[in-house]
Length: 212
Length: 212
Image (cartoon, rainbow over all chains, first blue to last red; front, side, top):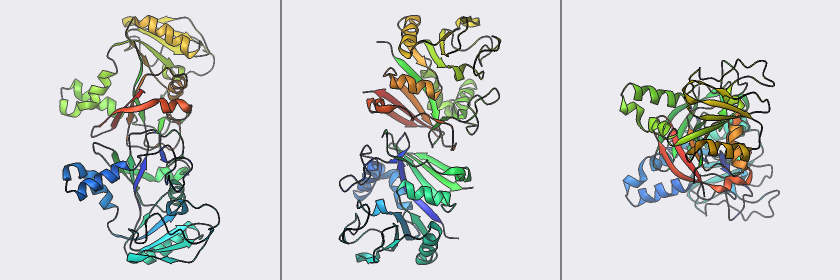
């Protein structure tokens, strides 16, 4: 059975996955500068052939791209625009050749036509229920798994709907003080998860949560 | 300058330091069984001479006892009794020779006479402000540091008062779902702390937070 998987979901020691006031020049909001630095540093090291520095951090990042045929994300992960689209000039954070190379379903109340990009990525905008979007994504993935992007609110929705099979969590040694906590609003579904794995690098702690 | 230090403060991945409904047969409440198992396992291993298994977990626990001359704790850490004392038969969780061997200040609205125990521990019950209790503890410690016990609410009070110098935090790979979060109610004081150290064992991640 194909799975719905979230990867590289990084939280501070005090539990925040995003800060406050997400916007164009602060995609994750204020108070969380450096939240994903562990990932960028590991991938840079791998690019430079420095396997000692790349280590398990880079391995985990690459694992997140394996056997993925479609992606679901919340609107905040797609961009900083809030409310109705003023125009359709915003095409995501990733330039004209986004790194997905498959169908990406963006959950938003503000619909717009599907947006084909270079390299095989097509963004679809949908206000359908979580279950419906997941069904469409599994169809698009054609037997491969579906990846669930962020933000934390989107992850919480799929957890509460009982649809998230696996979550790769990363705890990074910093404090944010405020923002959106990953582990708020899971409801009783939190009892459905167990820790399958915990491994630490010099930089962060990786935890794999799976449904029981 | 002597310091106020908290040690072995253990939280779940979702941030809880205690569960719900703390009571006699569940001193840390429901939902957090095994929260401190990392500590008991490490100390058992050290007792048995198995240094490989004791490792840095046992080192950190022992560090928490070094150069400590007095302790401050909240009432819930002293015992499960709530409201007025029915009688004075409860003398703490630790038997008649508690492991402190110095003055212990228990913060409670329900006063009772100081309670000298075997081995040099004396429990003092006080409803004085956090600052006053700390001053008394520093006097009792006579130049050594003061240790701040739990629970999380007591730690939050000393953080907000700007009085906690150092916090040894332990993140253990389990989920609780509810309870009291360590990192709630820190207010702006959270900006005053930085991560001085992060080290992981096979079992848990240790983080040392210090005031900037």
